[in-house]
Each structure stands twice: as structure tokens, then as C-alpha cells.
Amino acid sequence: MPLHPSAQVIVDFLNEAGLGLGPDSTPQEARELTARRAAWFEPHPVHEVYDRTVPGPAGEIPVRVYRPSAAGDLPVLVWFHGGGWVIGGLDSHDQLCRLLCDDAGCVVVSVDYRLAPEHKFPAAVDDCVAAYGWVAANAAEVGGDAARVAVGGDSAGGNLAAVVSLTERDAGAPLRAQVLVYPVTDHEFESDSMRENATGYFLETDHMRWFFDHYLRSPSDADDWRVSPLRAPDVSGVAPAIVVTAECDPLRDQGEAYGRRLQEAGVDVEILRGDGLFHGFFGLHAIVEPGREPWDRVVAFLARTLGPGAR
Image (tube, helix red, strand yellow):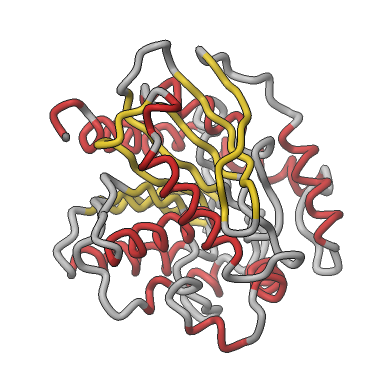
């Protein structure tokens, strides 16, 4: 599938710079490459950024709080970073969270959940559920409105956001909205997009095998809906969602399948495919031209679901 010319430039640069994930990469090597990518960006200014911790099931969870203004009672977006549950963190997604905070006008709380293989499934899930729960109960501490809290994430973070949404529904406390950006929703490697986009588009199908191999305790974990939310017995009653996928992404089909499953269950959901785009485009709309529409749609979705009239 052809990438948009502006997207092709970025993918070519990533490949030429040797910043992709090789089949023999160790988690530490992959984390170092991710840190190098994060250093490319001059931080986008926002009103306030600070680090703190919140209670978790295995100790304190680091989070980074972004505030668009000094005002209180702002909507809050709890963000779970991508990286296949193995790489990424507060720094890798710092620029993305700054941009979301500024454009959406909401407090963003970025969660530094435990990573595999040091902490395999369900450690990341448990941390994200705990972090969301703390924010929902203590939103005023970060200048937020407890009645307007959403979750979001990209890739593995989209997986975790979908899982938290299901978990909170089951707890009788459905959250306000969920933003799922090219989410992992199933342990599968045979969909059309997995085959068509297997190589050449930054994230590759073998990379997903590598991530799952580090994340799962055993093959049977793949059937757990907290790994594969597309396999959840029931997805009705969850928060309104926007599902963003990329045309040239192995995860495209499973993300869209999850969006359709939500629609069929009566959930208010938008599904948007970024044509000519690759996995990782979100937040690069200043340099990747077709990334602007998905970005604007997410910002508009947050305004609709978290605005003052959405209480």
C-alpha cells in the first residue's frame, strides 16, 4: 500500500537511521532507540508540567501531569503510552501529551505503567486500572473535574485504554470517553492488514510477535480479554469511543474490528482510518499532512464528550 509522500519521508528516515525494532533487539536496546526518537522534539509549551506518583498495586506509579491553564475543574484525559508493553514511557510520549493538553484544553495524566518482560501481563493492566481509579477519585488534586475523566492511548496504550474502559464498566463506574489510537485488540497475525503491511511501514508483523512474546506469561494469556479485548464476551455499556487506525499498519484490521464490535453493541463510536499513514503517525500532524484530520477529529471528540455540557 502506498504511503502519503510526507509519511514516506518519515518512514524512510526511521529505516535509514536504524531506529526500527530489529528481530534480535533486546528490550533495553529497543528502549534506548525509543529514547533517541523522543529527543528529536523541542517540547511544546503548556501552562504546567510536573511529575508525581499515585498508589499502585505494587508500589507507587509515576505519572506526569500536563495542565493547559491555572483553571480548576478541567476535563481530564488519562493517557497510556504505546510501545508494545515493553518500551516507551513518560519521555517517549511527552510531546504527544503536551499537544493533546494544549489542543484539547484538558489536563492530561500520562501513566508510566510497569513494562514487560520484567513485569509481564497483567502488571500493566493492573497499574493502568489503579492509575485511572486514583485520577477519577482525586481529579481535583490535578485541577480536574471528576465528572469528566476519559482514557486514551496509542497502540499497546490503546489496548490498555480499552481494557480499563471494560473494567470500569464492570465495576459500575463507566468513564466518560475512550480514545483508541491504532490499538492492539487481538492476538492475531493472519488478518489482511497483518499480511499486507507485514514489512516496510515502521511497525512490522514480526515486531508484534516480539512484543507479545515478552508481554505474555504463557500462550494461554492470548485468550484473556485483557490481552485481546476483541474477545471480551460483552462490550456493551462502555464509554463512547473514537478508534483511529492507519492504512499502512499491521494493526489496522483488528482496531477497526473492535470499533465495529462496539457499534454493534450500541456504543457511541467513531471509526476513522488514516489513509496513507503508518503506525506511529499520531501527533506528527505538523509534518505528516494527512495526520491532521485524525488529530482534529480526536480533539473534536474530546470536546464533545468532555465539554461542560457533557457532565
